[in-house]
Image 1 (cartoon, rainbow, N blue to C red):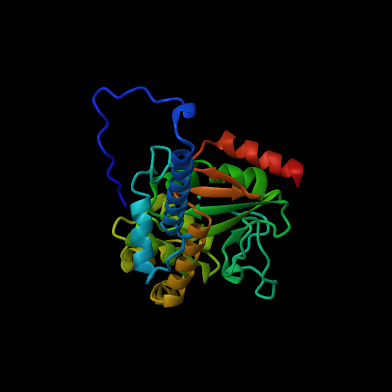
Image 2: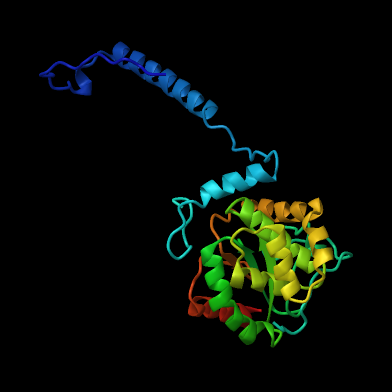
Length: 281
């Protein structure tokens, strides 16, 4: 509500000292000021409700909103919206009987039983990867940095990689994420993931994805069937919801024992954080 104030005179008179104001007028002014302050405070409280997170109506709606948020990604992938073989102990799924306890991010992983992981289950360092198959910065990390991290830390059993789909780039990103999960059903998530990042079929058609899977030794007929399974879409959607809970605003984003790294950072940035995590483990 706006309040009209009278225009001050062009040559206002000097404000008199308090001693020159009658006592009754002082009391009246104080009462009016207190009443106005209380009213304004009440209005402000009503105008500032607690934030409530709105549930997306469907996966497509979530993808559209996330894509809008990621539209302003910087050249190194670090800002969005003003703004990643042969590893020892590789696992394709978690333990379905494990209790629902918070993981390194502080959240309970509802999909732990089907989570793609790579590395020793008891590794002292866990790196969560929030990545988008259609993101060029994620491609850069996967091709340039991740192989070195696997050689240095994953293969010796020092670190485990945990994958979370974060398809900010829309429908194509969703299709590629589902394709990687279809590969997971043949114990080949990481192989399909690396193939997608390395080759990235432009159209992402079912035929192209099946051919890509067959080139990595997978059963093409089974792979094609799994591409149509809505359960895989649900798993990707669950990951996207988790990334929103963690306020992941751009891809790639990483959590190393809870320490966040944002963007396609160079190798030394990862080494510094991982080495500290190993010292503290």
